[in-house]
Amino acid sequence: MLFSQSMNAAINAQIGREFGASLQYVSIASYFDRESLPQLASHFYRQADEERDHAMRFVHFVNDAGGHVRIPAVPEPQPDFASAEEAVQLALKWEETVTRQINDLVDLALKENDHISKSFLDWFVTEQLEEVSSMDTLLNTIRRAGPLGLLFVEAYIARGNKQAAANEASA
Ligand SMILES: [Fe+2]
Ligand SMILES: [Fe+2]
Image 1 (tube, rainbow, N blue to C red):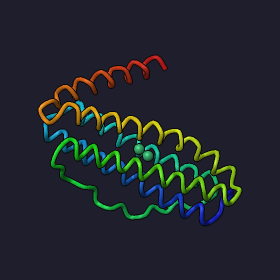
Image 2: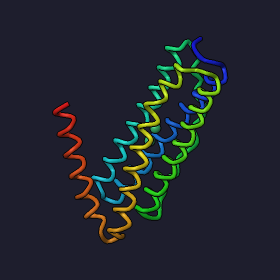
Image 3: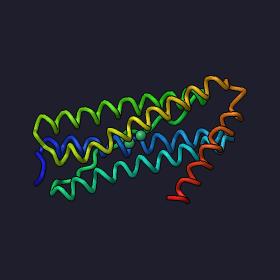
Image 4: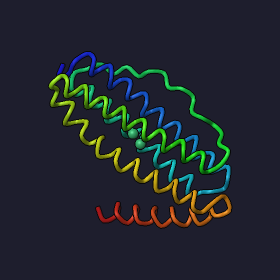
């Protein structure tokens, strides 16, 4: 095994939290679907897929390193939101928490002189910077638009989605 039992256990806990984030984002996307805000909905369905990818990256890492994947029970995501702002605020808080959890994993890797895990975790450190920053921008956009301006937010996200599709096509 290329890492310690405690690193294996810590990563298993993170696998649960990444799946938990995925379910929470499906729940947020569904709220936006109910509110007839399709761009916000598809944005969060895409985030949900990304969180599942994060969980699977950890799964493959544990298996490659000769560890044992144990997926913990995932708590029920919050199903209802009073407003778009509340839903995105929850997502931002979630991303900030995950950033601290990734930092804790890096701390553990450093403490154990575990360069294999440290190098694997570096990708997540960079990813969290991107995720917190883009969620923060979305929250500010929603706040500036106000409850009656959500259609502006839809147009704003549609532009971002078009850009993301163009980037994918040229990649
Ligand atoms: Fe994630
Ligand atoms: Fe995330």
